[in-house]
Image (cartoon, rainbow, N blue to C red; front, side, top):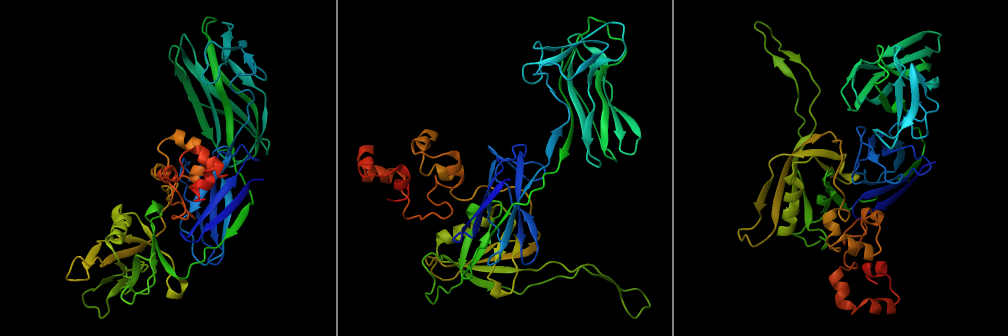
Amino acid sequence: MPTITATTFPNEAYVRIEADWTDTPAVLYGGVQRTNTVTGEVVTLRPYVAYDADGNLLLSCSKGLWYDTEPPLNTLLSYCLIASGVETNFTSNSSFELGTAPWTATGGTLIDSATFAHSGTMSGRITPDGTSASVGIVHPSMAGIMSDIPLTASCWVLSPQGYNAVQIQLTLSYSDGTVSTVLSDAEIIDDAEWRYITFTMTPTLDATITDFRVVALGIPPNTTLFYYDEVKVTQEAAVNVNVCTTATIIDTTNIRLKDPNSPCNDLTIGICSPMLGDCDDDNRISYAGQSSDGRPAATLVIDPVNREFPIPTNRSRRSPRTELRLIAHDCDARDAIVQINASGDVLLLQLPSEYCQDDRYISVGEETETRLSIDQRDEFRLMSLPYITVERQSGPANGVCGTRVQDMCDIYTSWQSMVIGGLTWRDLLLGAAGNHGPGSDFDALRIWSEVNTEFANWTAVAGGGRTWTQLLNGL
């Protein structure tokens, strides 16, 4: 069974999910679904690297890593593994790398050949007998075809001399006793060129393939050779697992404004008053409230002639729209607010539950900056962000701070210096190369120049009984 591990980072309000599918190597793409145990809402976590059409991450050595940068706060969350379907190939020895069995020939002679190969080193070669029609290769029967799932037959064909028509032929015997034959379009083969032939159909009942062949139509001469490679009949089988874990991010003292597409822009907003001096040093942005929520009607009212009452056409009322107001305590804080809005991405606004407002995905309109003092050297700014509440957007995201390439370069100037530091690719994804990754103690971590300043050479480091990781962590 695959395994799943959740690690929480309260400071950033993130959950890191690590999945190991080593026991199921056929699964190439995996995902994680988060379920809110209070509301029942289910979302699929965003992938951060290569992903497929279903939004699932391409596993590396059967392992995957996700950061949930949008978890609902103060709520028990369940994280469960999911996977894209696994392609099942019903044919054996599809590329003739193991000889010719179990394939047989019709109207000719079949051997395995290294003269041409579309993949690997071998292919199956047919030499026609010159007198038979429909010369080609035949595979034994194949059971286990499932209903209501697309079935694809495909192959690559090459003829050095070219030929006018090659076709896939498939006969299915269904569970109710009926039989049907499905044919691909006849494909013209150009001289010495690999040509792909395929078709897809969806069986309505469970079935057995009683005959599967790829043939050259007509009576090809015995001098016209045919090479076949990657000859397959495939169906995608669903992968069902029940592997889950839980996590909770507790935060009742901050407001979060997050950029789901670029988590490195995320902001922590203090609930405090800079005028009263009760803001922590870390809270360089404070909450100044929101204006009134508006929920516009989507109703058309028609006033007909000679009628006392108008005629309404009712539609669902629009989502809330209002204005978020933030106080930037200095220019850097102002720049951070500008940065999170620069791309125009949909943002996530999270308020404490006591504020009686659910998490909102918001699309911000025209951003305004108001100077709070006549003396503009006073850096305090009121930042006004009018917004409309929208749905959560799907799709991938950039890495979190500490896991991006530019963060790695903060400490390591080359891949070789990373290797010398004893770091693996997984360490980099976990943020070990940045000095501000999730959970990092910014003050404790050293950069390379600081190590050089403190230690004369590596002998001095080793003499103190330290490893590179201990140095990195400030020991």
